[in-house]
Length: 408
Ligand SMILES: Cc1ncc(COP(=O)(O)O)c(C=O)c1O
Image (cartoon, rainbow, N blue to C red; front, side, top):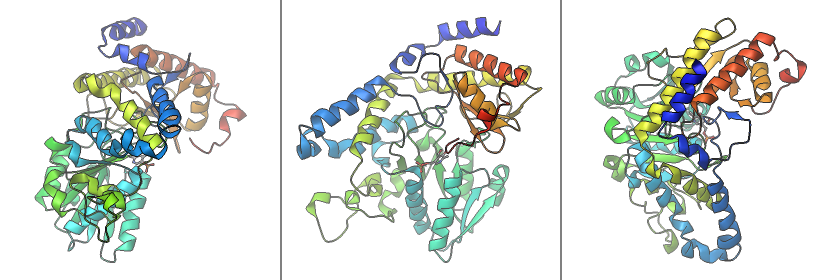
């Protein structure tokens, strides 16, 4: 019955043909696009062409002839509709961690007399580390960490900046970004959102949220490739007042004037800093091409439908062995579901052995991501079948599945 229903849903799926753009290995159900998105052969072709022709033959001429120098702006143009932003509000550079540091420092400069950088206890570790690092540099700033469900209650006129990850990387719970942004503005604070688990998976509309600043990864649901460059969003209304703490030459309005004095580039480009990593940027640029004619409402609706199928299946079939974590049916969440099991690492290892790839987050979470461009409803049923078998038979309970790994 569930399989029949899944086949029907796949037949009706307006995005079903997008899966063909990806090179998924035969026999693999890939439910880890929330960590590393899958490869599109068109991306590999673009990188190969850049290496062979633009670098190999064009050499340094390609900065102009192949417009390498325009890559950050071109990619910003591709990301803008996915974020509900204008292209000049996006800088593509660095890692999410570095961009977060730049965004937090720039936001704090706008509220110099306020001493609190507020965040929640569900935030991703890098976000907390970066916030602490900034507070360490500034004598008059402290990081205050509050429960994720009580952020609004802790907003007051001492808060300079609030920083949150929109979708909780562990539970999948999704903050009300517009409501929280409004509450922060009501007390005069700025907000820096981390959209790493959001863009390409759930609705994001930075303009409608009246967002100030945001950052995010491109190697998850945006499929940019391992370690692909991240982005930083800065609202137009703040551009003239924002200053990046890393004023490298690529953030200059005319880098090749080699001027003595730094003059910030217009718009979010002031948050660039050094030479763009061309090969990674070429991969990201090509990877984003697929979104050009995707209906974003269809994309995010499909992600929620896949999540709902997995959530329902896990709740009804697997309750003897695992606890389904996070928001219940219909509540706002990201495109992922986590299940609690005391031996999550071993269970995930056994699943991966059988071709169902997710990941685990210590100490006890199995995490599954449902990237709507290439995951099908049949994939979800297949994953549930394999998971049920692994749990029923105890196939995970072997020494090889308990071996520690560097990356989990
Ligand atoms: C919410 C969130 N922010 C930031 C990062 C890390 O970003 P980066 O490695 O680009 O600094 C991750 C990585 O998974 C993440 O989940």
